[in-house]
Length: 212
Image (cartoon, rainbow, N blue to C red; front, side):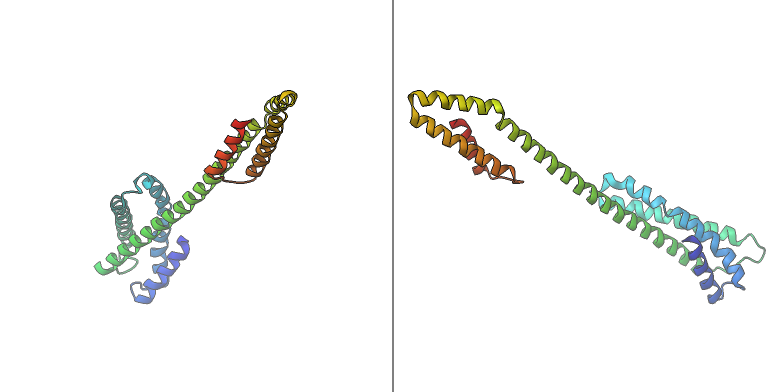
């Protein structure tokens, strides 16, 4: 990316007449473009460092503008130093050219910061979705664990023993308990296939359980 940007900048310098030859323009532009490209990954680290300040947009904007200004100023100074290596200079830069170079570097770094922010937002959304899926899975496992407790064999054995005892002196009560037990298990199995149940459904299940 830095090499491609350097070639484009060299062509622009050469076409604008700021450089006597294309080779001089290329020699001037390539190192600067590579330096700018190598500074762009730092935008990712700055974006991550500002995660704790997501609720303070003014602070984020100030930090981003300061970082862009610092990078642009450093690049402009390096451009002047690099251009002064030869007696006549590689290219003829005016004050307006330096300002344009500063603005270009600052805008590119700001774009890198915004891109890093967008990638961070996508990553956060992906993590949040994954955490939500894990939470749903844990909730489902908890519901299944509760279901297993509800249909514990001891509960079933105790219920059947109670029904057996009732048949000896209260057949009607034994029949009612059998129907209640059947209703309880039927509702339990029906609700087990649902991701969510209403409070009324849960209370109905509890009433059957307590009745047994």
